[in-house]
Structures are given as C-alpha cells and as structure tokens.
Length: 366
Image 1 (spheres, helix red, strand yellow):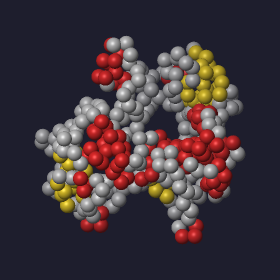
Image 2 (tube, one colour):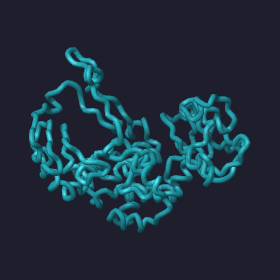
Image 3 (cartoon, helix red, strand yellow):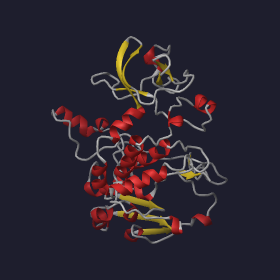
Image 4 (spheres, one colour):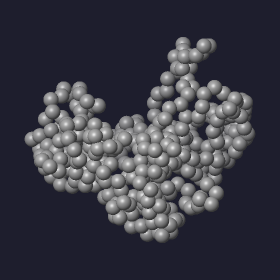
C-alpha cells in the first residue's frame, strides 16, 4: 500500500458498473489474454502451458422459443449417446466451435483452440441452431452501455475507468482483482461475478501473482471429540422459501396464486435464482414482511448494519422495535452497530483464540 495505493471512491452497490466498464474497455482494446481464453478444456489448456481454463468458448443456445434458449449446448444435443437421466448433468460435455473443422465439437474432444467469438448458426444433431460463445455474450452485455453510461452509474470518471483497466492489463497474469465487503448489497452477487470476470480475462487463475479460488480452510463444523455439529439427534433442517429470495420466483406459492389470477408478474420485490444466500436481503425482507417476517434473529460474528450498503437507514429503527422483531440474540466478541440492538449478547472468542484459521473465498498467489 502506502505510496502505491490509490483510493477510487465509488457509489455503494455500483461495483458491477465499474467492472462492466473495464470489461468493455479491455475487449475493445483487445487487452484480454486470448491464449488463455481459447482453451476449451483443462487437458488442452495444460498442453498449451496454461494452469487453468475457462468456459469462454462454450456455446450457448440463443434461439427464442427453443426449449433450451439461454442454456449451454451440450454433447447430448449433438447426438452423444446418453440416457435421459445423464443428459445435462456433469457427464454431458459442453460444446465449442472448432475453427479448423468449422463444426461444433464436445469440449472434452477438442484437440486445440476453440472459436472465441462465435456468433452464428451451426448444425447440432438434427437441428440448426443459433449459437453464441460465452465470450460473445459477455461482449454483447458489456457493449450495451457506453463508458459514459457506466461512469454516470458508478460515479467514477471515464479516464479513471480506462486507467484502471489499462493498469490491470499491463502485467500479464501477475495482477488480481478481489471483492469482499464492498459487494454487500442486493446486487452484490452479480457485482462480484462481474469483478471476478476481470481475473478470467487476464488469465490469472491459479497463476503466481494471480488469483487462487477456494484455497481451503479449517472445517469448523463436523465430528469432533465431544460434539458432531453436522449430525445429531433432533437436528432441524431448513425448508421452505429462503428469506433472501435466492430461489426462482416461479417456485413460490405467490407465483402460483398470481398465475391463477391471470397476472403472475411482477413480483413484489426482486428474486435472485442464481445467487447463494443473500444476507443483504434478510433484514429488509424481515422488516418489510416479504416474503415473510421474523420472530427471532440470531447474529453470529457479523455486523450487517455496518457492512451492507445503505441498509442501516432502511431497517435500524425497525430492528430496535420489538413489535417488528421480538427477539435478537448476538453471538459476538464485540459490541457493534448491529449487536447493540440485541436483547442478549453471548460473548464469543476472537479468531486468534480459536482453533483453525480464516477461510478466504479467494486469495492472491504470491
């Protein structure tokens, strides 16, 4: 840090706009790692001297009205012999376009580089389908807005956006982008995906000076000398619709009711079918009563009122009202903005007072 650091302030929750702007500039200026991105599989990538590979060349069906529109083309779509139970599972390979044979081929059968920017028709089994590579779709999405549009959205000047993208792509694979606390907003999952895409574009995954994904950590729940926190009598398993709405809206009873009434859309609030548990939505959902309210909230080692973009102004007053949320229990070594509202605080140990070590979602190889 020190003299080598520069803080670039951004409007909270708009990191995706910055990332997509950088992606647009990188693609426009052709400063992406083409050699990395054209590798269709791990086997081919390793033979080419790469440490990992991506799905940039994998083909997606883009044919409105087709049963699998918007989904990846798979080997079984080309006529590969698989049972119905095996189709579209792990054993059903993805498909790329071979620039030599000018035909689609299973990514596991590709012998060399695949077409990076494919956009056109191709024969898939008995069908002629409109297909685009994942990289083409990324370019298409990034180019939907100008750098000026992205700048207006995130509050970062265009010249700074260009400078960030230029700097990131000036060191080969020895550069990395990471995201953690700043992603904590309703759009955080998608923002983080866009930010992580920058690592893919420079081909730094599993490379020295680049990015490591899931380096591992201490198993904090499981069979121990005294307790087994993963399997014990009377354990209650979660069920129903998640409070964070991270499931398809179409699977909810609300959708079924509205559909029966002839107006299934829109939902009362956004649903996030591709996201994991969205902690950024829990508190607002609870106080707004959509999809339901809470009778009790247990906080363990967290401070959502501080960490989630803009949430304090929306929910802090309601969290302090026992009529809105009757019980809050905090398990934490500190009194913070969130635990200060708890009815009970149970002291917890610090990281350095516990067995194990911190488990980062992603890390930087040095």
